[in-house]
Image (tube, rainbow, N blue to C red; front, side):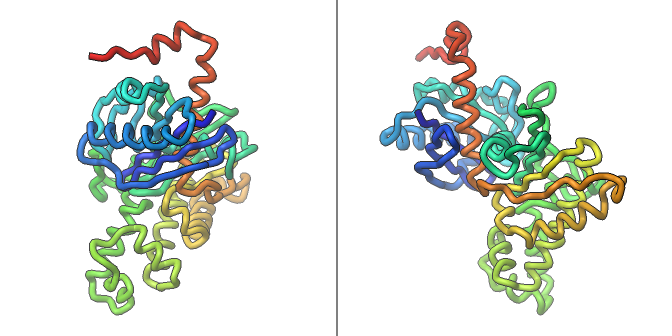
Length: 329
């Protein structure tokens, strides 16, 4: 039986029907419903209903950009979406009449890459998703590391520049303000507005600039855009070195929309990582790999986590009934 995975980020929502071996048999994409929690819930119900007309769906997994509790039911806070202490899994289960779990989007992406993709076979893997912000997750000894309250992996909100750029999380100078799609767009906009003749290609792009548009220009070989991507890669590598100092992973897997830039981004990141790593020259380097599923990792992992949750609870009828029973009215 297939499951549905839904990945909701700061700018887009992707959904897909996923088989037990990680194959996507149908997918859809739409802008993220960011104005309200109810709007997001309605959008999820709509896409589940549509996909369920054509597939026998056993469970639904939602990967969300935000802090999710350890029970995989409630989104505590999302810097880029309108969720604040929302028990979305239980509300969705009432409306779609299927088991639903919710998890952090980076956790979902990490689970896909660890089981089916670029992290397969690793003992300890760190996943970073570079989109509007930075998501993070770690799998070690075959288990997602969630922390005491289910909110581990938010390294994008570690401070790298004290007193730096304001961040939607409420702090300043967070890593994601220098190594994300939002950061790339901000830097490109400043360069385009400077009047520098070298930035003519950026100035000719539709405004306001987006990280995706700057990335496309970089892939086309525009020197200014390539330079901005390399600068962002430097910030990424600095953060990888900090993570390696504390967690010592075997492999870093880089996913999200910006990962599609490949070595334009990852080579500068590898150089910076090796330059900043503590004890360099006396310790092994962790591999830095592009995600195998690309931007689909989140939905594949969310579907796999939902299937896993139902399977693990299938022999515990009482617990399952308590978790998924719904009352109407």
